[in-house]
Amino acid sequence: MITIKVNNIQKELPSPITLTALVEQLAVSTNGIAIAINNEVVKKEQWETQQVVNNDAILIIKSTQGG
Image (tube, rainbow, N blue to C red):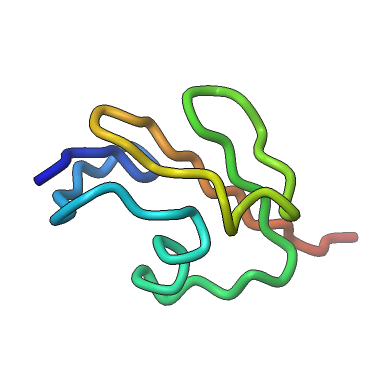
């Protein structure tokens, strides 16, 4: 079992997973989002291989349109 924070909300997962799997598990649309792990932005091309591990702080940022 691992513990992570996603946008400052603590979550427990059965084991380390990839960013792609985490996004799918959270049911977050991947259009217009950016993800940082421990204050480091992870390129979308790396989500499939980037592992989320114990004590990681994940920040998911959604772009918005405004005028």
